[in-house]
Length: 142
Length: 142
Image (cartoon, rainbow over all chains, first blue to last red; front, top):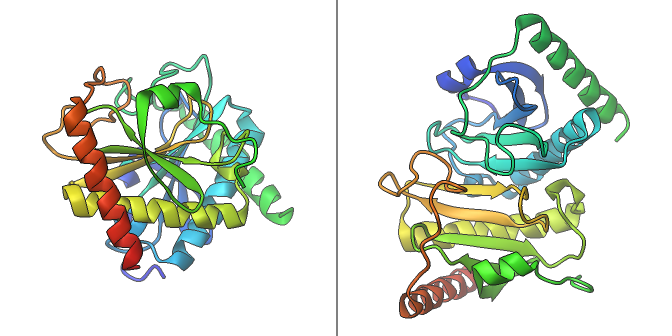
């Protein structure tokens, strides 16, 4: 399924690898202001959700549900923002952002609101490890 | 499936009915700046995508694909923004917005960017009728 798939260079720079799921590779946005994961279906030349086949959408639902449950369990947010925008990076990618009533952009959207605030290296590493552990735990128990 | 479902009052005020699909009711956001449809699953007490059952997610995919194809066919946008945010209105609703490189918020997100610019009544009516006709046409040919 991932023949010819190459991660967009801007996503490569702005995010760090977390885990590969059924359809998507999951990456952490390097912005310490919000727990923010990005799912990228490993399919070449894709920019819109409705271009996925029915089978691919089913896999994306599973990957998205799992990601949402990981964010809910680890961070206990007020709500999740799940969004495919693609105005700047055209490669299809689906944001999953844990939102809190005291986060810097609440209740507005996070995109374009505040400049990103990169993680300190050690804190980023710990966050990625915690998220990986939660995915592993959730996958064992589903 | 819609026992106990009541449309959120803010959505009721901000949007106009377009069509009922398999899972969702489709409404037009009263903002003439963007072709902007909102899909609301007709299920009571729902706020997050991952709370839908697998069968409901499958229906939502179908409704969302159809809506995306209608927006692409009618408006020929640069891209679509598809998003479940829920920071202000907690009832689950999924934005589908046709985006253009010359729209007022490009390339940023539309939410919270500019005050809404309500349609003139006659233009809104014509837009709703054009969207309804496109849905009907797409449903006949799928």
